[in-house]
Image 1: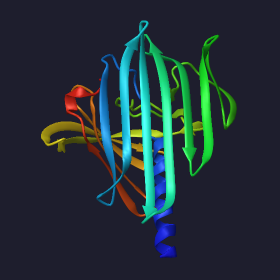
Image 2: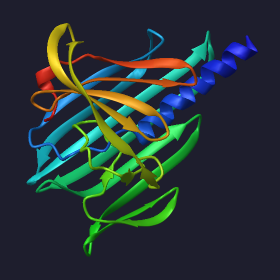
Image 3: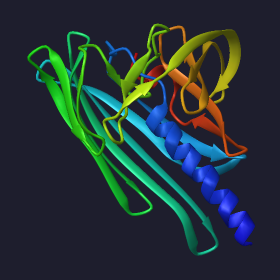
Image 4: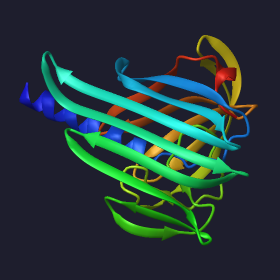
Length: 224
């Protein structure tokens, strides 16, 4: 049982790394809401959702993620993250995130000032070039992305994004055409986006455990 618990916890920790190192995004132009059930080897592991709305002339993206792993009544792993991003004219203007993993808190907050993105977080105080993107889920990542802001700690993260190809997938019971994107950082992550830019699928492997995201909302309901 101890070996099973260790393997389970390692896989859970890998999923948390994925949340921190996933694809950066372009700013959406249309508000919306997308919700996924996170599956570990076919079993429910938690949820990830993003809501994008318009407030005072800005797009505000609010991300919520909750993961939980246990054996019976014993909790082996817990993870929650709440993030708020503000965008104006297609550019990130502020970011605030709080993360708690197994009781340990991490955070980052910053904003665009004097032509730079200035972040203060668990990783320290770091200045990024304008246009550097946080690790968000809600829209398709650009292929040119080479670094991003870690939404857990504010650290500078290298990443490579490639186009895998065009595929037919099932999204909330609907068969659709989607572009398959791969993001390579600490983990190799597969993401799918439909023709309108809606995020409709995700899969990756952590510590030998296959993680997939099952879309709970209509494909057209998400931000794009």
